[in-house]
Length: 591
Image 1 (tube, one colour):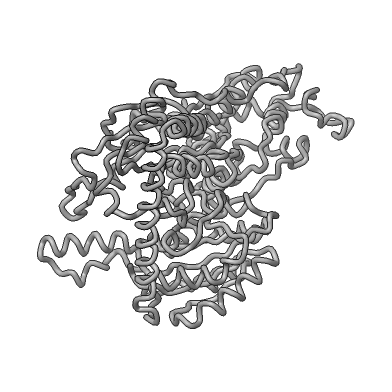
Image 2 (image 1 turned 60 degrees about the horizontal axis):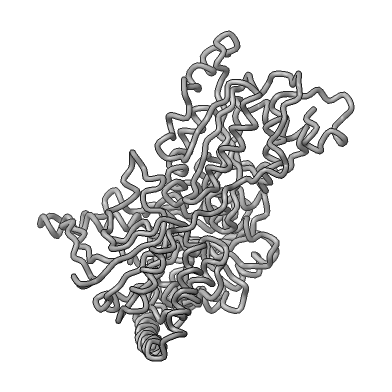
């Protein structure tokens, strides 16, 4: 028995120790709150240890698909900043999870993935299955999109590699790691004590501070600019990042554009100019704060022709604080197009933004004229913010009574129902409509957007799990095509009593791709009326309300009349407050 585990006293007196117990000790030592998995014989030894040695603490959560298991951990980490553990069955379970692992990697999310393989000892392999479901080096399947992978060859190699993996995973920029444990290694009796890492050892290194001279130079540029803008992508994900962004913007009198891979800035703050392209046309300094993708925000795209035009003026200066080329992929192009910058400060914005704010305050305090100019800037940005916000509210009421329902009508109907609750939006922003109409006033309101089809329901469940028991209402604006990928995910919410308000944004199509086919038809002069072929989700139309009920959740719909939305949402909200998932299927326009 492992003396460090604390489980020896409560275990049965005749319990025989197994090597997989050491992995359980480590899972407990590093404080994982949950473990998601889809069952598999390759980790039957670890499974038994988790239940009978570890007392199912942390609790295991059964998922119908490995992608959902990883995505729940993805959403949980985005919402809490804390990693979850995921167990994937040998090679086939790992391959099922590949897309979710890749998305976690490009979203810089820490997930501790525990894998297993059939015995490397050929003499212990079962016929057929232990051969076809195992690989020589299983980590090769995901090595291009995890921060680290390792497969220890003996039980003595497990604790050190586990500690290293945790440290790598949680060091910025964060990301998933994969640890693979031989089935025979797990199932061997534990014949000797295997020391765990010391209890006082630091799990994660201290954050990396950028060059002080570079930060001073950026501060000088920021306060000297006429129309500066702060462009933030991941800065708000760290504790205190949201609040430090507000302080920096107010101190420097700078506008803010929130990229929305994390909630970086309150959208109704007078200095917020997110999604206002007109403001970019006047910007003379862009300060990137932990930005990976500059281009999507700063260029105008002709999607059909694949051409881009810069929105910012040619004279605009660019500076950045972030992680630059650290952990850059050697395989995928997830690093996006490089933005030339006059200053590039390598380091963590969690340290850099407060330092930048302090320097700006010192500069402004010693110069009365500068203070007045900063105040004028704040007023001008606030005026523009008010104009943009008023325009959005007016646009939202166009085609108000249309059926199918407009995106803006649906966004406002949901807002009216949840605005007096302590709410959280899980991922999808309804084509940015909620960002233009809701009030994102607290850092936990939104952990950032989803990452494409088949990510929304899993990430949303992880966000809801993170907020379970807090009294907060988690809202999932759920695309229909996404839920069709894994409708069984609803069962996970029912089994583990994860409350969430699911509002279907159901346009009965994979419309993003349908729209691409429309572009091609217009460009080539072909039949635009055929663009829906291979894209539509009708004939037959899925009954998502019935699907939810079949999985043990509350379900209503389909609803295509705008006046019926709010009563249905109120009924569903009442069910959510009872502790269950409730789904309302609303039929929306295509775009």
